[in-house]
Length: 275
Image 1 (spheres, rainbow, N blue to C red):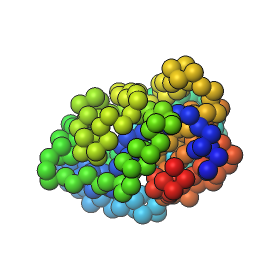
Image 2 (cartoon, rainbow, N blue to C red):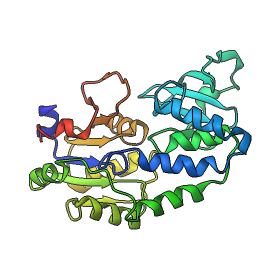
Image 3 (cartoon, one colour):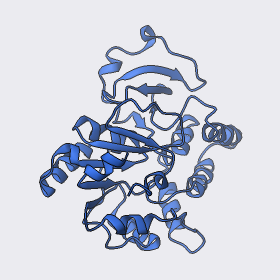
């Protein structure tokens, strides 16, 4: 870890789930979504969501949900091609029962839903139970997060760690959140004016590679001098590794550290001492 961070010239950070922690906002979102589900299925939704949080379900962060066939797809972490497909109940689906060319489809566009971070777990569960057109629930959750009722889960030591490297490294923020949301969250976190470049509305994972290539060009660096840090493997890590960059993947779920250019940590704080 020491060499990767010291030899890198650019750090690219995700925002949601990376620069702040906690799951209260996800649970608030799940509660709103539960009201969009028929009353006779609401308890099943809440039970499945709890199982997923307890990692006692086929659906986990890093997989893809086929909202049309109700399948859960496990992708190869580098090629992003399906290697296993399960039913919602966890039964393995044999290849001969899959649609033709299923492994060659783009699994990032509807009806496929990449489960990149905690936001997607309640949403996908609600889709399984018949909910649709529920973006207003996400909006209401974001509105809740802007009130004094929501206490943002700070990561202790983050501001100091970023300040300590700001004059030696380029710090970039690359997020799918919109400009207004980013400005508000950075102010709450005390991270305003710490980033050299803030890319909002990033449309990850579809446009991650484009943004990373632009960052290489902007700072005139080599791919291996850039490290992408985030909690969403599909959005932040896989595209970076594909381009020859380093990745630091934040996850509390079991994950094989399969490459010398990849570091897997449980918490962002795990890299602070090195910084």
